[in-house]
Length: 342
Length: 279
Image (cartoon, rainbow over all chains, first blue to last red; front, side):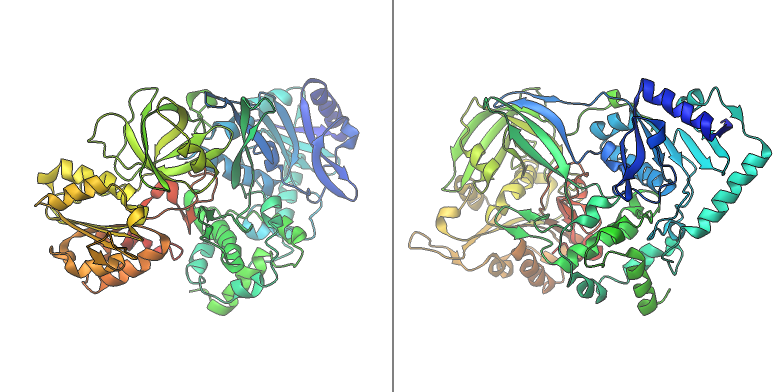
């Protein structure tokens, strides 16, 4: 599909036009950090950001959403959000995480709630300009992305190369001029640079080896050692672009006749995640819960998505973890040091 | 993203069912016969449903009836939490929500044909097993010897006492029962259910053994079966976890890499070698 070139001014006009006709959620400054928020003006957009506080998963799987309403003792009715929106400024590693979640929410049992929001979204991804302090996307092969977005923007200094990947993207870029060879070459240079530079923590093996490494690491002492200082706070679950476990809870209205069933984010690190009636907990040790999350990322979920590792190297868990035990690369490298690569 | 949302139904939306029969089995367990308002409800032994009480929530309950029986499906519910307490207040004619049948890990109805089948049940574990017990008994000539071992904590917690008495009378079934803590009303075996294993007449090594009970029971039953060299591929365990969404999304029921609600609740023991969290 078309590859266009826009100057920064042309791009700003395109953004203003978008804001005029749709809900645009773009990356903006939040104190000395960044986050996705409703965009009111193109001037507020900060595509040079390093990493957002929270991943964009909340626009497809909100922290809390109503799945259905009901009458007490009576019928249930599904509830959906019809609002379309533009998600502007998604980094490649976050785009890959969204692609993974798309696959997981559709396979086996199709989740209409997630997919309704997903289909209502127009995603404008952008290549990284400023590597964040803890990013390791290069190790996870998520420094650049090829699909899933409607448009991919690459900042080449004097403007953006914008590639349309869908009809929606083509339509948005219809007025822009084609990118010349110089622009394409400059874009290749950005990709080559990012593939190396987004590596503040270097994984000592190819990602394809991780599931096999974990096959041998189940009883390794690292889980107990690190979990000793784990608060079970679930911060890692919350900021992770590929964590999506949720709880379902009912809420009754004041009339005691009607109510709703909501789903809300939950975390496997939290105590009580596996608690059943009779107070029995299947994973009541912090070390087991800590290990479970990393096993999901590098072994369990990959088996469901064609081998892709479900950690995209965004580094948000490393930023968020108070006792500083969440760094997946540190754990995997420790296992490689002790167990070797067989 | 190829399929459109409109092509798919809402996997979280309960369908309405009506309570046909309801009775207290003992102080804590209630029997319910339900009929789906939408009509037909096809299931196989081992599957479960998410029972939905609007305003409170859902609970996963394994179906206790066999699909060979007519007139709706049956559940046994223990009164132990918010949802189940609300279920205990239901009377015939009341409506509740049902999602299901759920679970691909079913009892091995085909595989067991022509073989001897041994059921080992602990307490309320009889309820899920009963689905396959009655299926086997309704197709009696398809199966070899049938032995049912039931261990219950005390006399008042016994379930389906009429049916158990019938099974005891049948000469094509070996029904063995034991109580952990008997009182003067009990004249039978005393001890945990593993004490019945040595009394089974049929050859255990060539049988399919189906186990269901509280988490603590599995380890001891497996140790007892080990003494008879029962191949791990012939042992089936009915595992339960916190099956919240029941459709493989919310994550709560995972046993290592497996969603209990999807690949279970019935698992082949030899498959559990890669699931250290299972037992």
